[in-house]
Image 1 (cartoon, rainbow, N blue to C red):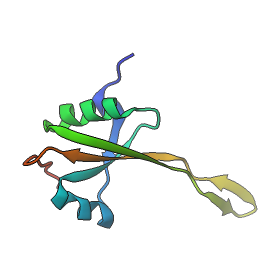
Image 2: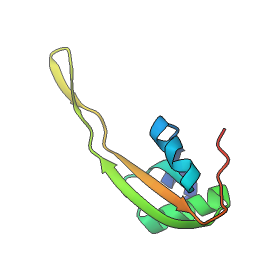
Image 3: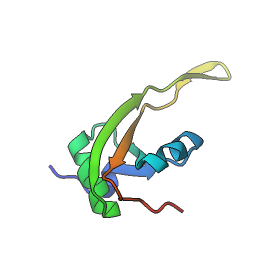
Length: 93
């Protein structure tokens, strides 16, 4: 079962904190929850045509929210911090 690279990488996250990573060659991505580090590495290399040095992942659990009288939960998300090899760069607009 192979997945398409665009199914694994959902979006590149552009937040204040993620822009602090960029001078060190690190980029933050929102990825599919059941994707592993090897799949994430291959997908980033295929989409952005760069060489990946290291991938760190983190799962953020959703929070409980109350809407009127009902409890709800925001979805769990998986993020990947991708470190590129020296001299590599992803152009973000």
